Each structure stands twice: as structure tokens, then as C-alpha cells.
Length: 272
Ligand code: IPD
Ligand code: CA
Ligand code: CA
Image (cartoon, rainbow, N blue to C red):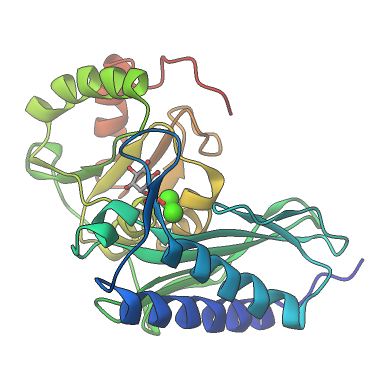
């Protein structure tokens, strides 16, 4: 099995993300067919599905034997050692309500020599911001290298978070937030995990945490934040999980981690 060069994967992912993002931007606000999935507040539109189709078609046109894992149903194992993790619109609630804060997210995971995300792309077409990263090389916004904020104190830091669609998980998230809010400068809930992670890498927020993310939500943004220089883990210095994703600038990582651990932020039973 030959691992393809990261440059080629990045170029392909970028093309696919731009194609889907441009389509979503053009279709925004024009007769959306809105349905719900796991709960009454978990929206999906025909544009989410069209974008996933565009992405899958773009990827398979060049790499027909790769694996696929997409939020809107793409699921094939593949035979090349490359699997694409696709969130065609991350931030669908914002998209439905005509708000900014949604993006296309695509990451390529390679199996060799050890399984890892090789490239990640998050495209925010409303702001024409393209975030990219290559494992072990770096992270960029519109081609410029990015880095997390330095020098912040937790008491003035701006922390992004998000809430699950599941009411039981939300009850836990609300209790954790009650402990976090008095300890930090401010909280933001923007509505796209992929963008939140990129913004940690860019220094637009100091940190981000959430329970309940799927791999397609966090795969690309997590790589982008980590390659920018942020620390991206669960609460125990291991890979992020569905139970807990935590990305922070090195400046506040330890302080915020201590608050989250004390709040029992990852003390919740949740299926991976
Ligand atoms: C959601 C967004 C949101 C996060 C949710 C995700 P979707 O993804 O990333 O910010 O809080 O946990 O499910 O449903 O818009 O693709
Ligand atoms: Ca998502
Ligand atoms: Ca989505």
C-alpha cells in the first residue's frame, strides 16, 4: 500500500471543499427543505446532502478506492489506506437561520505508518476563509501560517464551546458551564465545531471544548488547531474523543484543563 503525498490529498480536499462551499453559499436562503435527524433541533437540509454528494464525487473521481465517512451517509471502507472524514456543512443550524458560522470540513486519515489525520481543510465561504493543515508541516488560513494567541490569562480568556443535540448530554454540559463561566473571561457558542477549532489555531478564541462530537466534526479542525500550535486532546493528554474534545492555546491550557477536570466535564457515559 502506497501512502499518497500529502500535497496531493490537500489539493484534492481543497478543491472538493471549495466546490461544496460555493454551492452552499449560492443556495443559502433559497427554499431550503429542512428535516430533522436525531432530535427536533438537529436539522438537515437538501443542501447538506447535495454538498456531501459534490464532495464524494470530487474525491472519488480521482481516488475511487478510498474510504469515506460522511455525516449525511457516505460510508465505504476503501482499500487504499486513506479514509476521508466529511462534514458537508458543519453549523447547519446557523445555515438554516441565515447566520454566519458554518463551514465545509474534510480530513484525510491515512493508516500508515500509524493511523493519523494527514490533511485537513475547513472552508468558511461566508468569510472566504480557507483553513488548511498538513500533519507535521503546519496550518494556514488563506495561505498564511497561523498560531494560537499567546499571553492570555484564564480570567480574561475567551472560550468557545458547543452543545449536543441530546438533552441528557446538554444537562451535563449546562452543569459544567456553571463552573467554567465564573473562572474564564468569556464564553462563546458560535455553532460550528470545525470553525471553533480553526479559531483556536488562529487565535480568535483562546480555547474550545465540547462533549459529543463525531469524528467528522473534529477531524479537520483538530488537525488545523494542533498544527497551528494549540494543544488538542481529551482531558488526559490523549486523542480527543466523542466524550471530550479540548483545544487550547498553550498559554491557558493547564489552567482551563484544571477547571474542566474539577467540573467533571468528561464524567459522562457516552457511546463512542
Ligand atoms: C454541530 C456543530 C455544533 C456543535 C454540535 C455539532 P452540525 O454540527 O458543530 O457547533 O455544537 O455538536 O453536531 O450538526 O451543524 O453538522
Ligand atoms: Ca457537524
Ligand atoms: Ca453537518
